[in-house]
Amino acid sequence: MKRHVLIFGLAGGLLITVLKWSEYRFLVIEHSLEIYGGLVAAIFATLGIFLGLKLTRAPATIIIQEAPAAEQFTVNAVKQEQLAITNRELEILNLIAEGLSNREIADRLFVSENTVKTHSSRLFDKLGARRRTQAVQMGKSFGLIQ
Image 1 (tube, rainbow, N blue to C red):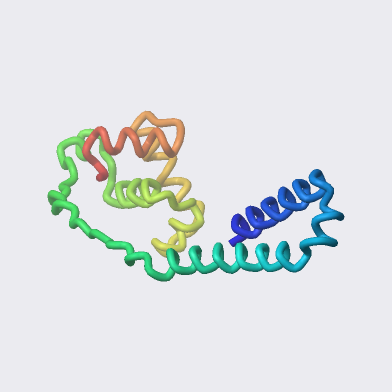
Image 2: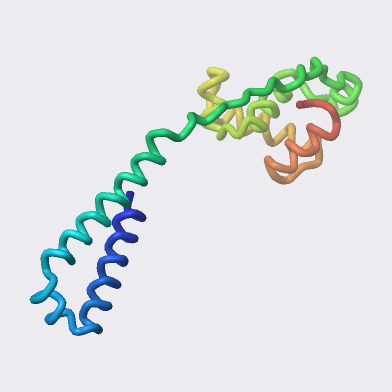
């Protein structure tokens, strides 16, 4: 809507400039009724065309395509045993992969934030990771998380 107002405003400004350039005083005095009638007719014609196009436009067609069913993910138990990662540490790794903070993980698991930090640091040591993102990346590559 703002674009249309801007376009009409610029068109009006351009029209005024043209009239000023061609000695509009003479035109306004001699042909004022014709000019104003023409301007009103042009405005209503433009508005009619715009509304006609807007109201008669066909509704958008929405196409929904189902994604193929994903395979059931299973944890690589051999790698989990090899790295000595507990089920709780694996659960925390999954929650880290979801993007939760330590406080959010603690709230979800009903433990203290310090407990989450302890499990996280042990998990990072076992995976050889320094950051949360690195731990998630390694967990995916080892088949521990999806």
